[in-house]
Amino acid sequence: MDLDIRTEEKNGQDILYVGGEVDAYTAPQLRESLKPLTEKDIPNVIVDLADVDYIDSTGLGIFIGALKSVNANEGSLKLIGLNARVKRLFSITGLDEVMDISEEREEAK
Amino acid sequence: MSVQSNVEVHTEWGIVSARQAGRNLAKELGFSSVDQARITTAISELARNIYLYAEKGEIIIESVERMQSTGRKKGIKITAKDEGPGIKNIRQVMEDGFTTSGGLGAGLPGVKRLMDEFDIDSIAGEGTEITTIKWNS
Amino acid sequence: MADSFSLMQEQYTKILKKYLEEKNETGLYHAQQFSKKVLENQISPEEVVSLHLDALEKYFPDLPQGVFDSFEFLLEVMMGYGMAYREHQSLRDKQKELETEINVAASMQQTFLPKEIPSVDALDVGVISVPASKMSGDYYHFIKDDNDCIGVAIADIIGKGVPAALCMSMIKYAMDSLPEQRLQPGALLDNLNRVVEQNVASNMFITMMYGSYDPRVHHFYYSGAGHEPGFYYHYDTDTFEELYAKGLVLGIKRDTTFREYHKKVEPGDFIVLLSDGVTECRTDDGFIEREELTRLIRKYKHLPAQEIVDNVFYQLEKLQGFQLRDDFSLIILRRKV
Image 1 (tube, rainbow over the protein chains, first blue to last red):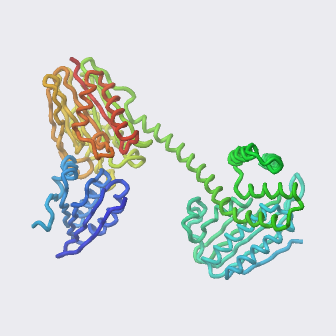
Image 2: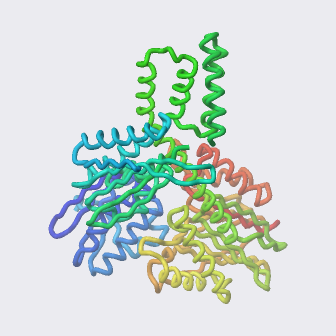
Image 3: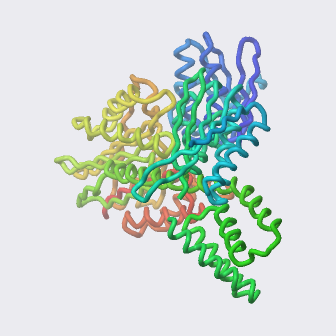
């Protein structure tokens, strides 16, 4: 099953909307869309995960790779709209302490 | 004694002419109808590669002989020469499964299996030469 | 090959002739049996047409020429199938080769896992670790020191299959080369993290829970690197508690430190360590709840630890229609009553 991916540029931010299940099969698709955004000069990336029901460890790895890339390019990465199951995964792995993560979505502001 | 036909392959007609020349010689050399079909299929595949991916090329069909302990053996030799783009990764096109992806060199493993001997030389930017032989058993 | 082909030719001619004379179901049955032989002898489709053509020429030379010509035509049409058939054969051989290679690698991987579980009088230990396919991304490790302390590690390497297995060898050697901190979980993870961080690709990571059981005082010390929480079972109250040690997964940040937690283990209490393949069991109705898992463990808790883990695995495997989606590892350490 493919991921539903859409990108949008707003106020100098790249917003990536992802929908579906991020697992070993779909992770390469996510990496392809996310990687170039994180490799920009001072990247400012927001990933909206409101329509993601499930992320497995391979999917988590993509976000870790993105975080490392963003840090190397002195930019920022934020994940928003995480559901409870996805949030738990980031919390158990301790990634919630090294990544900017929010259950809220940007629109809610 | 060797009979040789050279067929230029520019169009699909060229493919048919090459098949015809191959079939005539194969019949003459006494190949069975299955072997005739194999030889012409191999010619088709090679000629199509030229037609689709190289601007200019030819198929050369000739009879060959070999001495063996069991006596003299006759065979048909097909050479496909072109001045096309060449094949960058020969090992890759000789792998099964690549066939289905289309592109230059597709179908070569199939040709190799239809025939008894197979040899390929290719230089990127210069062209490709494939030689293949079927012996009459 | 030539010999078996001419034998087939003879046989085909015989059964065809018999069928044309008698025209009964027996004859057609022979044809069906013959088609099996065709496959056994790796005769390709165009050769079958040729068998037919030869038989016709031999027994019915008076048929109109158009009939023979039409079979020549069919022969040509079958060439595509013939080529596909040969490619299939060759791909099948290649698949067998790859399978053999993977089998060798899988049995080599087995040597990374402990051959036996160290035994101490105070503990009853059960372990099961089953890969979803041939190679596993789950790793576990046991060690006993001179004071009879038992060190236990459970780790999950991102992804599964061959890439995870390759990464596992690094973990195994890294752990073997850190003997002095072996029984101090926090320090061990600090060191391991540095090795992993330097050696893995940017999107790789490893989660691990490391624990150390001191049977002299019955304390269990443990630290975690982002690993799926386990359970702690209290014998006196018959309750499960989540066993979680907060900590960042290995391989992200070089200077990560890991907190050490500890539990006083009473008689009959047990510790459950697991990989996320256990809690992420998926059925048609969605993921199983962690309560489902504790319910299963409770159901078998009267059994020896090994039988508990075996039974729980069987039940969860059954729930998923005997198809594992992820590597599955479950360890139970119980203080004997």
